[in-house]
Image (cartoon, rainbow, N blue to C red; front, top):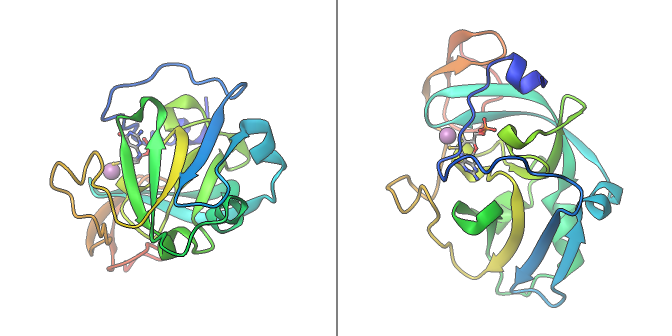
Length: 199
Ligand SMILES: Nc1nc2c(c(=O)[nH]1)N[C@H]1C(S)=C(S)[C@@H](COP(=O)(O)O)O[C@H]1N2
Ligand SMILES: [Mo]
């Protein structure tokens, strides 16, 4: 069991559950509009500077979970590949390449956008996008692609799995009710990143 599972955090795999995803041998490619394309193994990513983000993952299907997400800031990771000046969007590609989504580069570079490998001190299991997923608390959860195999710098936003099916690319979190997964209570949220509830 993991903390996310203990709290009954929903598990979303729009492309179908990929099964076991071993961290050993896992690789992430950094490419696209970069001077220095590179491939990093899971172990190499664990050796990069670690950041902890106290943050919420909030789904457009109206639930929100808070925890201490551990991982590498994209603002620490992306410079390793030396993005070119034209790079303006970051395409995040999940295992098997079926689920993708793009983040605007400036959102990717905010301090709590992570390539995450932990939640509350535990390694992420495959259900929740282990071994490495995006955590972007500033936008709806569909921008936090799970089980990442490639991160590609682009000059435009490329519609991904949910964007092609009608969800807005801006993915701004909008006010309303959400189920707080941590407390199993319905709460009200304002527009934007969920920092506090309104009630
Ligand atoms: N590969 C992949 N990543 C994904 C999804 C998905 O279906 N497949 N769902 C997204 C959505 S809509 C949300 S809200 C979160 C949910 O994360 P969880 O399944 O770990 O709770 O993952 C996002 N990342
Ligand atoms: Mo979602």
